[in-house]
Length: 218
Image (tube, rainbow, N blue to C red):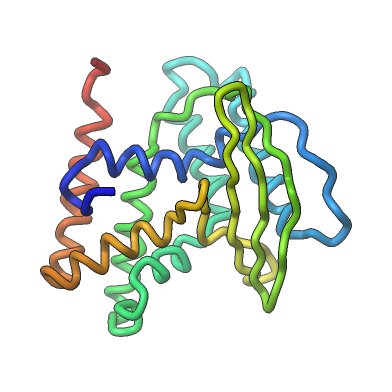
């Protein structure tokens, strides 16, 4: 992957593949063993997204924005954006003030949201198979397989148990982790420029992505 800030297309392609995982999964899941609460949490979120995509009241071009907001609300309840953002910064996170941490999380969420906003419009025919999960000390990894006519991809959801609920903090698609990919780019920018330079690039990227989304299809 190219460095952050150099290629909107390459950046968008990767983040879309990760951010869209919840929206791609349809069909009948495999059976879930008793007590696998993390798996049930992932399944429940996917089911809720499917209900929005199947809602006749929310179909049509004039309902795109409303549908997107509903989907974003569902995902926000399941994803721990602060934990995800914290892990993308690594050791840099602890050196930030509370205000700087909050600002970084807000920029990170905006970057993710603006990258996939408006691109999810309908269900696809892929099916997700739940292969099992591993739990240890308040963390879990739910292993799945996304299968379809043109796709057969392993997808792992990494979750943390917090405030009585399981929250996703990373997604690994065919071995590619969203946290690791962002951390690699962020670390390079901080090393070559500064943390302030990273924040500036994130602001610029968020603006550029909004412009990119409004460009007509070729």
